[in-house]
Length: 399
Image (cartoon, rainbow, N blue to C red):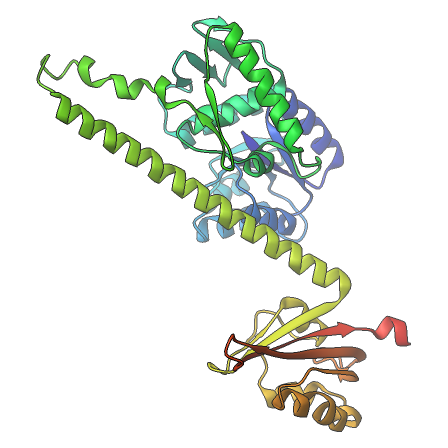
């Protein structure tokens, strides 16, 4: 189970991280609400453990924001003593449960187990596939009723497979799900070593080929151990012999189609998560480098600016992209002729361009120095389809 722990208190973070890690939870850390919000947009978490009082974005508001966008993640809100009003607000805002500080580890773990059962909608928390059974309450895996001795990472790998027994997991997806943000992502050799160790222990327990390797795709559980495919002839509500071989084949085809559908859904979720992660990394990189990008679509006449480009010009990234007249107004009056000759005219001639200009920030009137460069984008027929470019704030190097 992957948890996002959100707290500005380093002591509390350290204690809870140790407790959760000892019980095989995968724990990422955020120190404020905005950081938590960004992580929750990029990664898939099973639960969020967050304090109500947070810098930048408080816990109750974060709950509201997550529910407004339809994020179903389980939320456990940590409150200050005797803060009943915040508990009511938190539950009404989308939190699943509240816990009053000081946090007692047994109570915390019990809450997380209860929320996990609610999230999985299971009457029993056991995860079963063939002869294997995983009990998240006891943190124990049994094979043919005998305890299987595995280390923490092997337990997490089996928990992932048993939670989604019909899904194929690539090595990159396993790394994203089972290693925290502070950890270095595992190499292929590391993952292979873990899988090989699990297989060896399962073989010693009498289970062969429980985890299959599909080269170029990843790993999945062997469907031959799926007991659901064996239930037709043992269904107590059906008379013996009533289900013929044709019906059985249809049933198995439906089960296989359903498994493929679930796998496709999970793969799409993973791709979307990777895209969100890439977008966040690009935004952060542009912010650090103070480089903004823009793009103009010749056919639709639409202009796109990245967030950093708005910030460089002192504009709100949530507002619409400035018009050509508004963009010209942002240029220092003494440099507008240079902008026309070195940027605007070459762009119309489908030529690359570059110029160093001064701009006047819209929010505070500060004069900044920029390097602007760009050029045309042509299709395979040589037709102009877009103009694109970058704006680099070079003020600190020129002053």
